Image 1 (cartoon, helix red, strand yellow):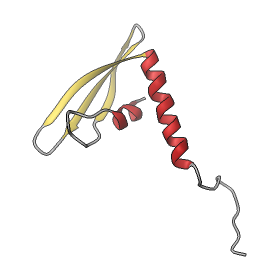
Image 2 (image 1 turned 45 degrees about the horizontal axis):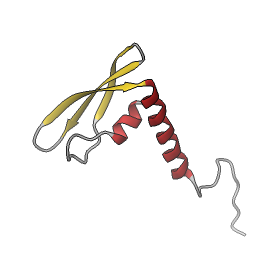
Image 3 (image 1 turned 60 degrees about the horizontal axis):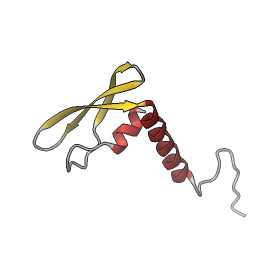
Length: 82
């Protein structure tokens, strides 16, 4: 979940990935502290994520990971030079 947030969240127009950590989980809501250190300033903000948002983020993260692996040989697949 943290990795998915780090890949999707941005602070304003900043293009850097923020650092995220979970700080609280209560009543089906995960609260994350995010930190973006850009050239001019460090910015901190919190993001509350519901269970359904967690599921959507995890699905998107898994889909992106699988898409990145597409076209690569499976681990253990032997290839010969001829």
